Amino acid sequence: MSQTFTYIGLWAAAIIFVTSLVILGIQTGVSSEVGTAIFSKKIVENFILGFIIILVAIPEGLPMTVGISLAYSVDNMFNKEKILIR
Image (cartoon, rainbow, N blue to C red; front, side, top):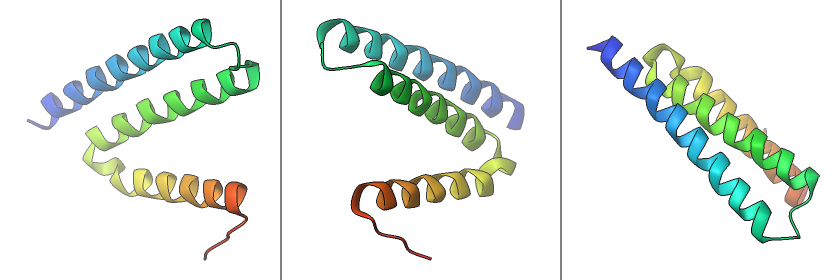
């Protein structure tokens, strides 16, 4: 059963990653405001999303997923609002 969920998670991550790249390509083609910096940032965010889905699919990866999401949230809070929480 664990292997089945792992394969389902891998397929889901791949489908979501490809779909988000297609959506990003469409947005880039439609909007002239999306530059290379924003485009590369969005690609990295999509890759992180796919990676987190894979980690969640494997039960042993849960602590790492929580750590990555907390670190990413703290980084966003610090960059946007200059807030740093221990």
